[in-house]
Amino acid sequence: MDQASSLRKLIRGKSEAPSRSRATTKTSTRVISITSGKGGVGKTNMVANLAVAFANKGKRVLIFDADLGLANVDIVFGIHPEYHIGHVITGEKELAEIIAPASDHIGVIPAASGDTHFADLTEGQKLSLLAEFEGLDNLYDILLIDTAAGISSNVIYFNSAAEECIVIVTGEPTSVTDAYGMIKVMFLNGSKHFKLLVNMARGLQEAKAVYATLNQAADRFLKGAVLEFLGYVPYDDYLRQAVVGRKPVIEQFPYSAASRSITKLAEHILKTPSGTTGSGNISFFMNRLISGD
Ligand SMILES: Nc1ncnc2c1ncn2[C@@H]1O[C@H](COP(=O)(O)OP(=O)(O)O)[C@@H](O)[C@H]1O
Ligand SMILES: [Mg+2]
Image (cartoon, rainbow, N blue to C red; front, side, top):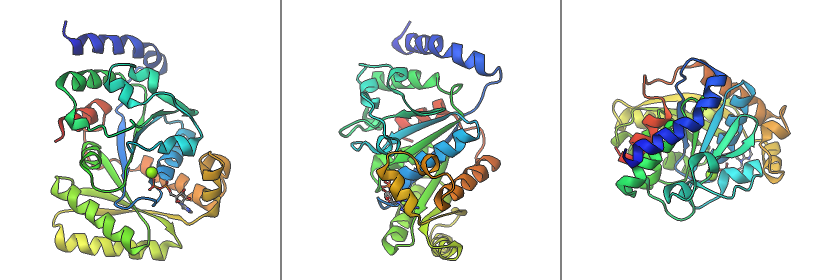
């Protein structure tokens, strides 16, 4: 038996009990990456709060912190995981051991420290990582990926491998140009469909104006790209306070404006199909991620 199949067997043995007791039907995990061009636009907070909003609707959510080098998602949830995905890559830990519980029905795969390039892993590392992730499809309904800022190859890999890509942008001109840069690189990499979310907006009008600017540019220069307006989250001081309190705003201030709009957003996402068919599961995502295409 080769390394991959023995690992697969190991993972199956581990994951069978919980999945059997939960449901008999096989679920397909929805894989959504949250990205931007510019940093500081609210990706990590959106990931954490969307996770809570999905979990409040009974969904089991896994967060993949792909902002390598920075302990991002941990901070928003106020958790201090000891291990990270790097320990799985080196074989020191199994995936199940490093997934940190963040809240009810929410698990976090903490980011590796240093610069881990998934496409640069050895064949053996890739196979064992794939085997480790295979067991997860039955355990989670949604995988949210928190990416780093910028258009590094890692970010592009994560976004391209995900079934859906939500681009976060604010009204700041630099954020808009950087979001366009991200969409363009992704488009040149083969992605066609993007969902745009305007964060820290002063209202629907401002959000729509930001969307219109990007949509016009895409219409003109990126023929065939589809930019969908997902909505907006208002600027909200409660969200800032929540960051200081190390608990997602939806948990700390559920009735704040930001919390209400993120809850509505989560409902909208759950109601709408992903836009692509058949590609939404964790194993498929990992396959694409590590093969780098
Ligand atoms: N809707 C919002 N209203 C007010 N402040 C926000 C909002 N979204 C994000 N922020 C602020 O922006 C900071 C950066 O957000 P973060 O989620 O870390 O961004 P990113 O992950 O894109 O770098 C947060 O610490 C918070 O203070
Ligand atoms: Mg972040």
